Image (tube, rainbow, N blue to C red):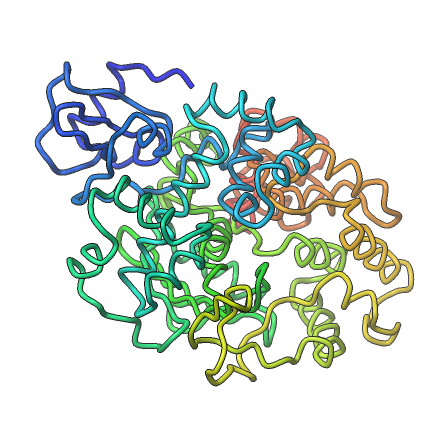
Length: 500
């Protein structure tokens, strides 16, 4: 990645928060690296280097600033929206694929050799996949050190390190202090929710229109899976190592997150999915500037800056929602989905224990604490949906078989609806499923695959919103008009839905 020195230095000199996560500032005279908005005195030009990733700064021998916490900056919006191999790799690394399956597993998911993948990431980010995953492990470990009462050995394995020695060496190298000293500096204050509960702040680039996010999610909330109450969104998650519940409360400059994890190894993927769900790595200034250039949308942008695209915590869940929502109202879709959830409840109503200590002899599993039976649960898996009978669906036979075909594809791996999947290939395979057309595939691409440039010209609410702001509501004419909103047409869809 090419970083223009003058532009980067101006951002640092003005402490511009919009650039946090885009790049990192290395100060050679002090041996630290910072986020652009660090409140410390602006370093001299001759002492500054700029890096495209925290891992690249660490590879240059720099340690993280203890004042601005560069590892807690929002993620780069570039890796959030890019559909190429590097963008997909960054999303998969954030979801913990390297920790779970190693670099060979990451390369296999992307369809490249390990050597070629390493070369691509080094060229773009200044660090290979192992270094990028190591930087994420260090951040996960810091969160666990500062917010839980777990022992250091437990934290080491929960954060994804292969050994306690590797954990100690990495923390000393990244933060220039021992893990025990890092905990002492913050104070040992485990979360009030008990063992297995972690509280943290999820940073974002302002502005954030929290009301638009919560309104959207509340209207579509599924009983037993999610809810919106008192300005907080709560939902159950299915994570690689177990179940979880999350509570997300938008606040000034951050989203307060409380995570209840059955297995602490799921912290990094839980954070990544929460950030993705609320579109926290977006660059709202760039999106709003582009949309506001159209006089038809300018009043909407001025009235509600920072509207995001609510994404998905589970790609299969979003595909099922899209199929169920074909040609029916949001309320009718919720009723049908609630029926499906009731039918799958016996398959998923297990005691997802939260809390306890990590047994290092048992794969790092937490145990010996009360569970949270009766709380929110994750959406049923593709395999579970495939097991229920016809009566559970409450929809026409053709649509029922479409859901089963999607479930089979996700279960056997032929249909990848995760954020790290190939967007174009995912849409192509969705369109090959009988019963899935352009609207359904586009909706899944927008919310599950994270494509920022999807437009739904045949959507009734989009057409109504277009008419409300004086635009043509004919699908063909509206689609042609919407080309001026590239590459942010997904955000235009959300604004038109709100206008309707």
